[in-house]
Length: 138
Image (cartoon, rainbow, N blue to C red; front, side, top):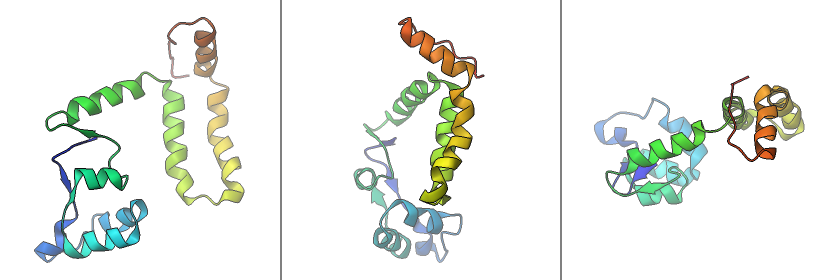
């Protein structure tokens, strides 16, 4: 989430420095290499709209509304089963280093316990009973 008037960048070269805190490693994994190279070598910022177009920002908000928007999104995430949320996040992060040949087995090792959890049973029961689930985190 970012305000429409926000700017993003790695301006270190404008100060005689290098973006050594991870920007040079992470940015080319998120945007096309040419865009990452331009940002790193010029130090020029991206507008929020351009960051959104490139997928660096999921959502845009009006100025002053980014925090309320982020809190609303966080609330929607927090309303879900904690084990399922944590494991989903873990798989999405870890899979970046997996080869496709073993990806399904590695995912199954992480997700299997979630499918056997009390929360999974509660989720199915709540759906059948047409009520909000009461998560236990187990």
